[in-house]
Length: 362
Ligand code: PEP
Ligand code: MG
Image: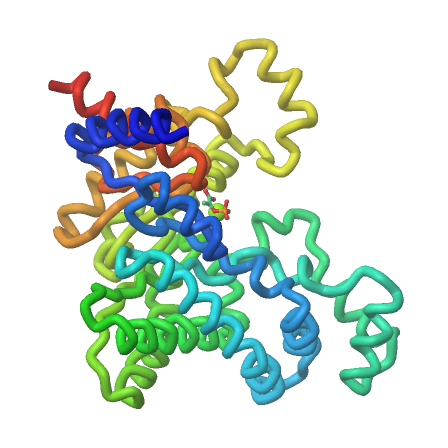
């Protein structure tokens, strides 16, 4: 084992000498984050926060929030989740020891969080002082036929700003605590807003995110820098990246959604008609597995070309599944991304692919 570890380390050290792309990981638990760091991840490029809301200790409060009638009630329900969410982020910052951590705000549609079992619906009704019928009506009202194109991502932050505000508080409070505990670490949280399609959307959400973050920092009386960036996962965002870049500190390509929306193929039904469809070889590869360099790639190149001149400080990565696929990594190198982010076990492959891409370009 020691011999294998030694050889693995030697190959990886060699790859790191040549690669230009940074390699981050997609992780939302400290154990995944630590595993990825062991495998060479240089940061978290995507922390999906949705699973955190399903934890036993907070799903009830989140459901209460969904069923609340007023902003005050929603804020009160979210206040119960805040300490847990802060703990989640503290653990991730600690695992990363001062390396960058990008926290993506809540993305999936609200209806994914509501109870489906009669017993849970009854519990929620009792807790809310409502009838089972009232709760069912509310649940029905959240149902969408195309939820992936619906009430999710930044749209949730527009209709329920309280959620994004709570997450902002958690991000900043966690960062301040970790900074206090480790003054030598470069703790600089990166807040990522999903599913942006227009500069006005980003401005709208960023305004209260920044207000909330600045108020937290002022109250703590400690200097803390943070960034607000956006996923680029809707074709419109890529095509208007010059405008979006004026308000964003970073871009991260969400190529899962970008592929879905560029092809008009549902990423959730990929195993259905698509399996046989790909057999016809109209498309060379499954575009969800290998980045489609013709369409999706062109949108990425467009976003880079438009975005960079608008904001020279913009840093740009990819956090869709393609971030761990060698040919996709090579493409990301060629078009000039700063980093790729992939699941922990794909980090070594991404490091090797990034080195290979750099060498073959010499
Ligand atoms: C993406 O869309 O590529 C992405 C990384 O976000 P998610 O898979 O969570 O939608
Ligand atoms: Mg996405």
